[in-house]
Image (cartoon, rainbow, N blue to C red; front, side, top):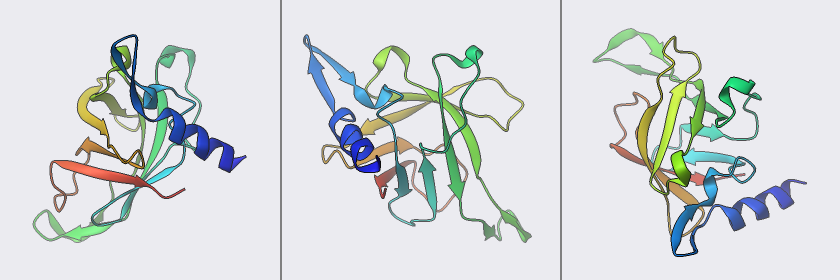
Length: 147
C-alpha cells in the first residue's frame, strides 16, 4: 500500500499545466502523503500520514503532524528545552502553486497564516517559508521526502 501511495504522491505532487493554468497537485489531500524531513539540519519532520481527520468545519483543510527535535537556545532560555512540535491544519487557496495557508491546531488562534510554498523541480522536495521558530534555519526551508 505504501509504494502505491508513494507513486501516487510522486505523480500528483507535480505542478503542471492544465488548460493553460498551472495547478498544484500537492493541494490534493490524497496526494500530500509521506514523511518529509527538513534538509539542512535534518531535525524536523512533516508527517502527512498521521494527521487527525478534521471536522466538517475544516472541510477545505487537511492536517499534518510537525515533529521538531527539542533543543536549547541559550539566547532565549538556557534552562529549558524548546520544542516546536504541533499539529497543523493547512490548505491551498484556489489551487495556488506558490502559497500554503497554515495554523497550529494547538494555538488558540483560528487565523491561518500564508507561507510561500514551491514544489521543487526534482519533485522529491519542496521549499516552504519558515513557519516555526528554529532560528538556525533560513527564511526559506527545504523538506525532502524520506518515506
